[in-house]
Amino acid sequence: MGMNVAYRGPEDCPSVIPVFPLPGALLLPRGQMPLNIFEPRYLAMVDEALKTDRVIGIIQPDADGNPSSSIPKLYSVGCAGRITQLAETGDGRYLITLIGISRFRVEEELPPIDLFRRCRVNFETFASDLTARAGETEVDRGGVVKALRDFVDAAHVKVDWRGIEEAPNEALVNALCMMSPFGVREKQALLEAPNLKTRAEVLIALTEIELARGATGTDSTLQ
Image (cartoon, rainbow, N blue to C red; front, side, top):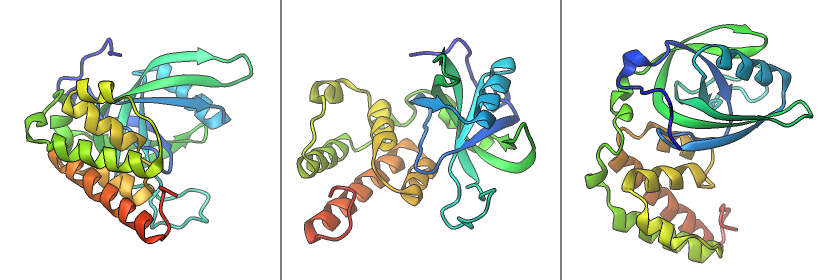
């Protein structure tokens, strides 16, 4: 799935975006994220995005912040996505699909509109995100596939191995990161990895840790 708008550099990205705080959610450049929108404030957020540039920032509440706060602290890095599909359900919900554009760094949070949160953001640090498949040749594809095989064997799930074999390195690594069952801190580490090679290495390391936990009977997402 593609976009009708080309983002060639940070200057093409909006400086102020609505943000959707979602713990455990990970959007990466050119990744696809389906969302079921039903809360009034986030329905208003989608309406506002559709009026402007269709861009929404996916960001996690900070795992080390105050969990009891009605306005949780946000991590400083998220990923912007463009609404490329929208369906109205007839019962007050939106079903939307975002395609990841680029990661961003939060510069400041602005006063909310209609109760949804907005941030002034900067994309300069992550300018390479706007180049498709950047750094693919440096990825340890064999290590990624081995980690996936080990995970699949331990979790007793099925995957489309043909699709895995045909996927380019960027699409493979980012899709596996987005679908991974890791927690908030682990997802943030994958998001903030400086490049695709490092993200693949973090993914392999986290998978090995989970497999080791499962082998020793400790708390694991593989259980």
